[in-house]
Length: 246
Ligand code: G3P
Ligand code: CA
Image (cartoon, rainbow, N blue to C red; front, side, top):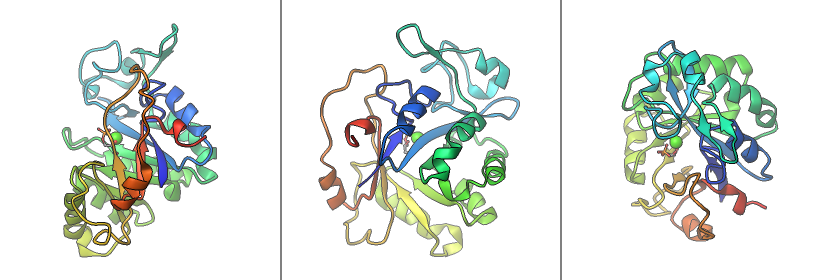
């Protein structure tokens, strides 16, 4: 089972922050880090899960209504008097560049199914291509047209189709990408494996979970990864990857 850090190490550190990514980067054997992107009023791509800043920062409003400078004034409480800022994707790519060159992957989820951020795909492709990180990045989205746009421009870059049921990911893949048998992974919710392992043979299935984010305390419980593997899952996004990989 391949282990990913979901929004970084997001149980012990605030999700999608440099602190959460720095901790994830240190974990030996980690396959990759997952993060979410939105876009500011002045077109800067920033790393934050929600369309609004309210849940994770001391601000109020939509990311799309802030300039990048305004967004950087917001603070994320990281406990013990520490504060984090919303990172830009450039900052994260620069920070992880060396680790990615050594094989760690980065899954960038385009959060563009609620707000169709104009030009987000092209901006991201440009940033990744300039750094030569095509093979170290996987783009995912619930909005499959966005992934097709990326795939058409840069077939070297891997993409992952997000949905709840694995069967929906599977049919989106079949129905898209000009019907070509391209290397596109399925990213379903881990409890919605409504196809058999045999039906999923040959597919990369990266499952995501919900719940237990910083500042919630750890539960001490661990998932049975062997059971997930029997369901056809090849990779899993975890908020607490550090307890699975010593
Ligand atoms: O990429 C998998 C997963 O991150 C999708 O759900 O809400 O955590 O972005 P969410
Ligand atoms: Ca995500």
